[in-house]
Amino acid sequence: QVQLVESGGGLAQAGGSLRLSCTTSGSIYSIGTMGWARQAPGKQRELVASITNDGSTRYGDSVKGRFTISRDNAKNTVYLQMDSLKPEDTAVYYCNADLAYHSGWYRTGDFWGQGTQVTVSS
Image: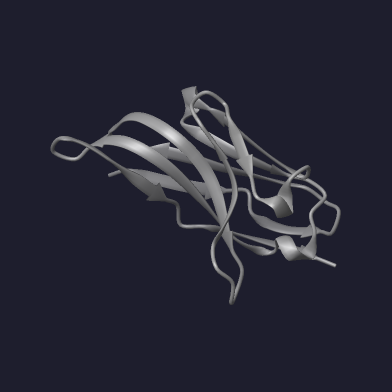
């Protein structure tokens, strides 16, 4: 089974930092774009950051200049370094990956992790 597992969430003070990790495992042929989204209570899920195979990155307007996305293809892992955290960053953060994988035959699809809670205090 294909799985995405996030780690690194927790509590931080405003102005502090956290680093999230997401490792993908399973019968995977290749990994395309990877990214992070977040969802706060009562809010729609929003893009935080994404990164393509060639290293092209995109960031949501609210995190530009504060968050950095990176990936380690040898480890099938994507990271989100979060600096200068603000209380409004409080949300569940979800990892996403566009995968080519084996499930009886070659298939492609988007997969999501279970989410990790990030809470930033004032």
